[in-house]
Length: 480
Length: 78
Image (cartoon, rainbow over all chains, first blue to last red; front, side, top):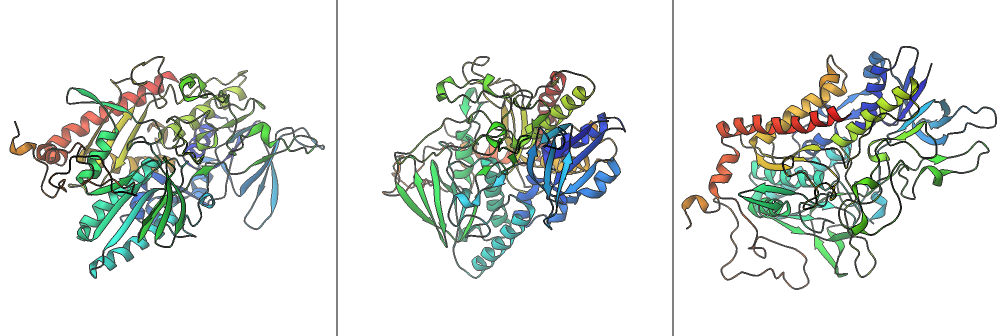
């Protein structure tokens, strides 16, 4: 009998748990530890944030789903990893803590760390729902964003002009794509509510150019040319009257005003009535201890609290970054029965070129690893773990983001006949300049377009992925 | 030669007469459609096609085919 413990029930952890349970025998156990009692289909939070969906449409309780699937569920925070056990036993375990403060040691044979990120609103003064801006990172945050939007709309209906700022709340944020979806949905919704003429909308981003999205941008074939993605993002913003600020590190969010630094080192400010700004991420702060109780956190995690895996973490200049730096199996180099999946693994470096202001402020997007790649990694890791339980000496599966494509649909307005979305495929996610010297990507499999069809696909994906996450009949046939 | 369908759609903010520079207002990092007249804009025909249902039904099939191509190529690799 083997015990597989998975920390986190987000896209990656939930996928890993579901496949591990499906592939393992009845004598083996799969245990999920998550502080949340619900699964949240995060990509649809943006629709909650503009009032088009309710939280119950993007969340569902995990316990009944796991009970039906035969997965043990513990609602708790993972606090410590003891990969060598303790003085009483060499059995490795994880110490978890419930909301009531009760602690429990959960023994494992294989551990998958899929805890996702910690939302670091604390990195920027005044950032976040407890400060002066709103967020759509969780369904609850998105409800707050929707309420703030309703208040602004009411003011506009009374004749007031409102200034909206959407984007990244720190120079090292990732997930620019989610903020992009929010700003274009916000603009669409203001038009639908017939108050667009009273709104000034500003995009503030740490990207060097629009359309970077933390992936170093992409190139697309269009009209007989191969053109960079900033052309399309700029075009969409100009078409919709959205203004933008690039290369910006938001240093403070004060009531009604953001302070930000640009790459030239200048300190600037921008007033707002409504601000939806994403926070930077870090790992969740797990600690690790050896058998003697010595802190070995640095052996398992980088200083940013993301887990070390089979990547090349040697610091090198941008010109020397290669696709081979990226992890393939997500196995911990220190302990072969520990893996990290999804946002929890430490990327070897960014994908976009890094820039630093004359003041030493890093203003560059962190690499995205959400959605499809997260699920693909979770599935590959689960497969490797199952194979190792069955006798394989090493991980059997690979899911390098430098060898993996991604399909992404970014909503640009939700309506069955007038809505649009940007549909994109990119291959590979991390550019590989050895295989594709000119653009780093396969131009036959990298494309993008905006249209109503994309919105239909986005709606279909919402229902399809929630169906899959609920582990309803045939769920495993639905791709990640 | 410019045809009516090459014009930006109605409602598109137009750059002010004489604005043909990337220069931003002093002290501001804000780019607006007025300070960015170089930005590519869609033609009316392009905007029309984005929500023209028969065309979008075709694009729906085409985009799905491309996305499934990516997905199943990845699956085959595992």
